[in-house]
Image 1 (spheres, rainbow, N blue to C red):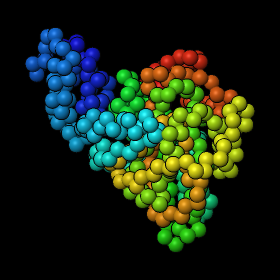
Image 2: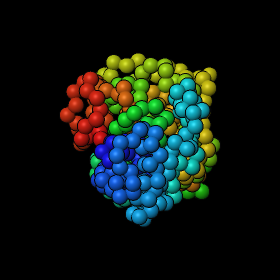
Image 3: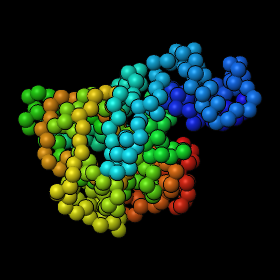
Image 4: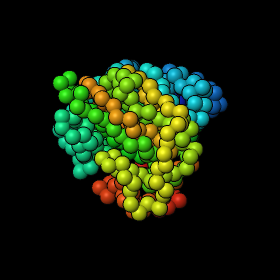
Length: 333
């Protein structure tokens, strides 16, 4: 029915399965075949959509990818995100999606974009690249059809989310080099780098390898409510010039949050939450993670100034939005 089709976007099974817009439209069109015809209340629609989406996924050979984020995201997790600005969710990314992302990660290294950079000096290896979904189809498929959009929306409490951009990180330190490989990321907020205002802005970090606690990035509890401070250069820690934002103050003495993670876990944190590794860390092994960024209901486009003027969206993948516009557009679907 038409009402069922309209509500498919609210169904966590539909949002978190590997179902694109065309597949969702076809699923809605097929609803009558499975008895979901006529007018239904929202509750009746919700009861019908989950089995329909499961049946569609099974028929399409995608049943391994289907997840239901609502079942994993308890009210306590949403409350922790609102209070602390960061929360860890366990086992919400399927093994099939992780396999998909590991293949995408190999493509990212083989085909670096214009914003790719090496953040560590030899013998360390710390690769980063931005806006991969604008260039590489496996990343776009995960960003738009994977479970992270639903996770972001549920954690933020937003009725609609838009995909902002993605960023891939790849750290690798061989055993013999680990003692000389120091990882240091300055405390920073993400949102000052981006042309978006509002409180409904978040990142979903997806680790592809186990990350022990001693190698984890730390978050400052409650810093999502401290206001906005200048972006910083990762290599030097210096503030961006010309932004009009105050420099990051001393952050000693604040409560730190950090979690060890396994593939399948995610960390969701607000765009205004301070995070980093100001304390030098010595690491060993390989750490790959994808960070997928989304905006929610109150997010609006803005224009940053100075060195932050064209970070996201970049000059390579601009948008046509004007200050104050809602984020939904072709560039931010």
